[in-house]
Image (cartoon, rainbow, N blue to C red; front, side, top):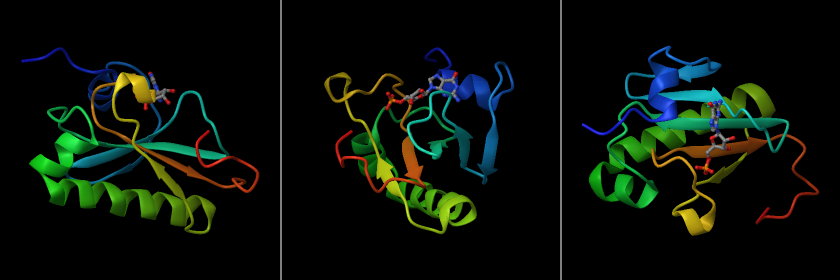
Length: 115
Ligand code: 5GP
C-alpha cells in the first residue's frame, strides 16, 4: 500500500478540508490556494490513479464521473461554465500524484488559458 495522499487524508478526516460535493466514488474540495473565484478540486476517492492519463486508461467511467461532478459544482457556484485542468506530470505543474481535476469558474474573462 502506498502512503495516503493529502487528498486521501482530507477524505478520511485526518486533516481539515472543505468537502463541497461527494458521490460514491468522487469528492470535491475547495483548493487551499485558489486561482479563481471558484477553484475546486474534483478527486476520485481511490488514489490508485496518479494522473488523468492513468485514469482514462484504467477507468474511463470514473473519469466521466469526475467531469459530471465538475459540471455540477460549476452549475451550483458559477452559472455552469467552467475550465477543467488536469496537470499531468511534475514538469506540467502537478504536485499531488493522486489524480484531480481543477475546476476554475467565475471571473475568468481576463485570465490566460495557460495560466
Ligand atoms: P497540482 O499542482 O497537483 O495540479 O494541484 C494540487 C493542488 O492541491 C494545488 O492547487 C494545491 O493548492 C492544492 N492543495 C495542496 N494541499 C492541499 C490541502 O491540504 N488542502 C487543499 N484544500 N488543497 C491543497
